[in-house]
Image 1 (cartoon, helix red, strand yellow):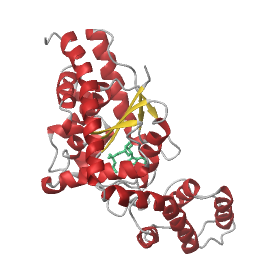
Image 2 (image 1 turned 90 degrees about the vertical axis):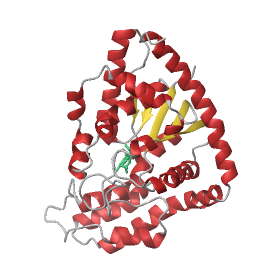
Image 3 (image 1 turned 120 degrees about the vertical axis):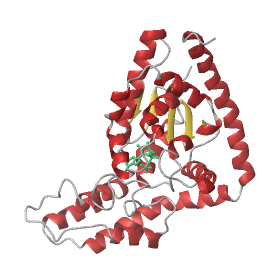
Image 4 (image 1 turned 180 degrees about the horizontal axis):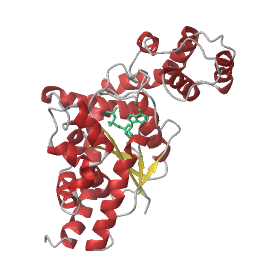
Length: 326
Ligand code: ADP
């Protein structure tokens, strides 16, 4: 049997370069070789403030993004998390063997608490358990995801080990699949690029003008005395993006300009904007085609859903039995 791969993205907004480079590129690399399930994790989406009227549309947008980016329904299964109720059933069962104190210590929980102090709900604390259930429901051994997800994948491994020791060998030890862009910094110069942080991102659907504008507001400096590119902050981030999207020769030219103190950031940002747009253009064209063909997208989702139900029920039968629930 082929190894299983699972990954999901929340429907909190349009996909950005961080999601693309950190997660989707990994999904694309793996879909040719493994049995893959790629999800729109709408149950994770609702742990932060959201609008129920637009959630369904947001989920659809991510499905379109997935297809346009090249996830191929002939090679992988596309899942909408809430349509496979086994996720929440397994999450509850796994929550009974995992300590609350460990969840309270996780960095993402602390960050979200600080970001939404009036919205600290049980679901937010529970997030890593649901994520473990997402992965283990399919017994996935590999998860293509950004570096920010590493602590959650560690939780998944801990839960799997605990379950195996209590109820017998059932779940694998999951590893994260790292891409070159596993950590894409925010354009603001601080932290990671994120859908929920205004001014931090470039969306995959942005046109050239929008990309230019977003880059224009990214902070820079007025040169350097040491001649070394800084390790963090606005300038470091621009160089990192340049490395991901441009050829070595273009990168080296700007690096030399920087060292010699003659860098022109407006020129660098323009070159970068065009390089990013050139990579996104075929994606945007393909997205249009899928957007205009709703029936095709619906039928892809229906076929995938049936397969996801079958796979997840297989695991759940085993889990219920081992836990004495049947
Ligand atoms: P966001 O934080 O933008 O809402 P999600 O939490 O939905 O994104 O994450 C979806 C996937 O994208 C995860 O695999 C996550 O690790 C990856 N990801 C998100 N932001 C970045 C980033 N800035 N750099 C690399 N990968 C990222």
